Length: 613
Image (cartoon, rainbow, N blue to C red):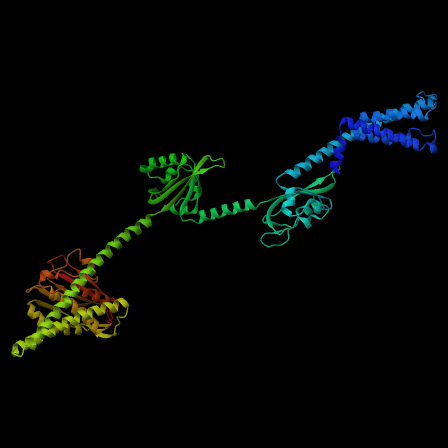
């Protein structure tokens, strides 16, 4: 209807005058049709509607023209003398003049009304065209909340055509719910119609489209008032924010990643002024964001690296991305930090470089681990080398007594040997068999220790008696080797909780090594003492000693002292490792000391006792 009125009010000038003539002719025809009833009465009254309509459609000109045509026709047909344009009666002349004046007044008034109506129609049509063409969805309602207008975007989002939606309550077409709770949300138009003013949707609102889509939207609604200030309706403008929501979610996820990152992530201007600072940077460098934002990056850069930083700023300002590289930066407390740094240009929407993004990672721990890994690899290489040496020694040490056993067994097969040779053979077989058994026991003990199956038969053991018995068993070997054994185990009973056999194995190993590596004429000391509730056993010799580079590793498996200088058989290098493991199982420990090769060695064993201090 609005468009029809606008078309009628904007007809061409020729069309407007043609309509004026047609209206005048129609009014004359109507008056002629009434002639049988009225005759010559009321000749002018039927022309006023034609004048009003002609003036409303065409303006003042067509209205006056209709007035003139109707006045002349009335004068010719119904004012005496009829069929003449003369006026015989002065009263009729006055009536014609008044008719012309009233017609002109009607035309003028209708012209003003026409212009006002045309301007209002044009304004409404312009508004409608604007609302129909904007990128947001627009729905207009009357004062009762029924739809009067929908643009194409609103049709697309709601799934309703304007023709089907017009006249329906807005809540039937615009179905909105809370995105999280799915509860129905109050339509903002209802609030506007109830309270006036303007309002908008709450956050996280979903539009449930007629075709089943769920579209996140935001909107605003405002009242529409007439010239008298009364509420005529409302208009709601809303938009699909799916893309914006995704962008916000992406930005939120990115911000969460930045905040959660343990790396330092910060931005700065092209001249190096810090503009943002994440928690990772606070943790790494010690500066709170409030302390360092708007400060120069120079506070983090050691003096000797300032030129490096300046060069980096120039490169990034030219559009280059700096791949991660290692450098040093300063913490708040002045400590230097080894970091890996990468830089990227920040660009505006137009593509201009407006800042720099920096990611710094603390690699000091990585560097420490790398060094530790290299050291561990070197240790592993040394261990492999030691193990290879051990396997070579093992094959040699096992073969040597085995060869002796085989050799002396062949001697015994000779029926012509005398008793002295027989006794010597049996003694050699026994000695080498025991040596073989000791090496096998050592290997088995290492296997038990490795698997955690080395167990102790714990009992109360008199350590003084155990050492005295051990010394008695070694007297023959001490005499044979021509060394002096100085023993002082005291007179006090020292009770320890432990496995007597395993403790005897420990001290036999230590004393056996001392005898093995001490030259004839040398001296060995064995001392037992009580310090608080700890038994202390010292074994000191004047033998070949321990090289300084071997001393820290003397209790490791497969490590051996330099037995060749003593001119004696070496062994597998497992004895001292087993000693340490057995003592640790007893809650004790062993230490080795030596001033170097040729300076002898000292071993100190400590064990907790049951003696009260």
